Image 1 (cartoon, rainbow, N blue to C red):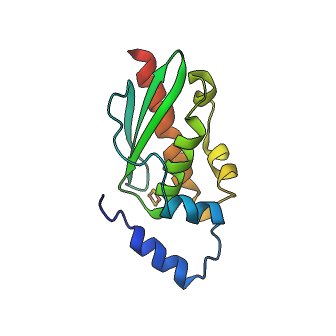
Image 2: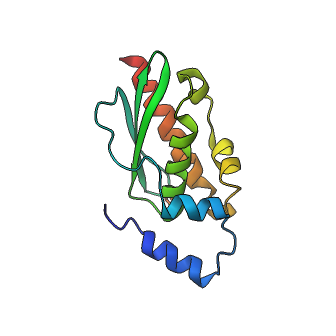
Image 3: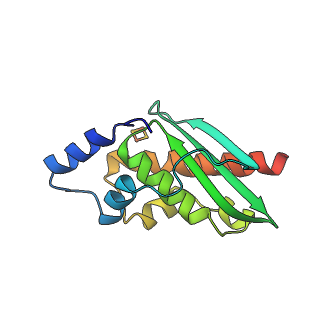
Length: 138
Ligand code: FES
């Protein structure tokens, strides 16, 4: 895995003594779940957000339920936390339920984000929606 700005994120946390970041954000940024390309997926999307960073999400659906997920991003540490959380939220849900996951759900699950990084949650939620859309087209 490339650095993905993670070390800079960690440094910024140290600088700001974690100000503004919940424990969940720090946990998911430092120990991301479902990180990496998912082999054998049947839905995927790659999306570049307005900040210029990209996220990719893979889903593996069977019997209308998302069984496994994977994500990748070249974005900031917050984007890593958001990709981790959105894939966690989607795993185990029906395709329809997962399709309803939005930016606010990611924010709520992470215990909020500083306003200037909330768009990272939108990047993650949008990429998941596009992966589900691509699955439905197959
Ligand atoms: Fe681009 Fe966080 S700043 S994803």
